[in-house]
Length: 144
Image (cartoon, rainbow, N blue to C red; front, side):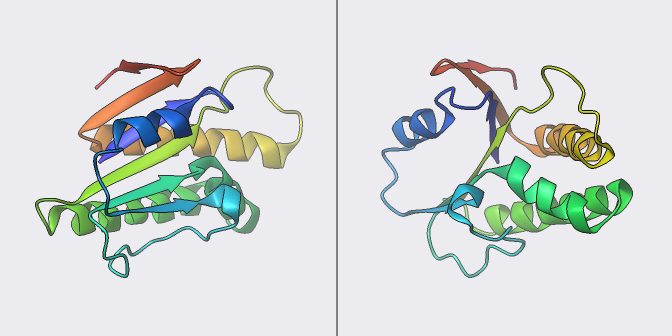
């Protein structure tokens, strides 16, 4: 699993498109296109699956459950994704998330919970990923 993180509109999508352009058989799932959080990737027959907009899916989770339950659900998703990826040698999962941890801490409790859950979720996915890249202004820095 390859986790890509960076600020909003900092070139994450374009960087992933360029980096993974050699793969013809890929499937892009985006929260920005109103796709639901895919828990089980078994229905995708592509070798490369790209999940974009993690922070949006996490916001949806925080609207319906408390922080602890969100984190449990998220860890279960990661485990399902890793099981899918490891089932076939050529499979690659790329997960893209926008960093929402910078700036002023939100005053609204719901937005603080979203920010907290997203931070924990990013820690969880970074720990399980083989590779982590931060994208700022279209440039990557590999941190794992």
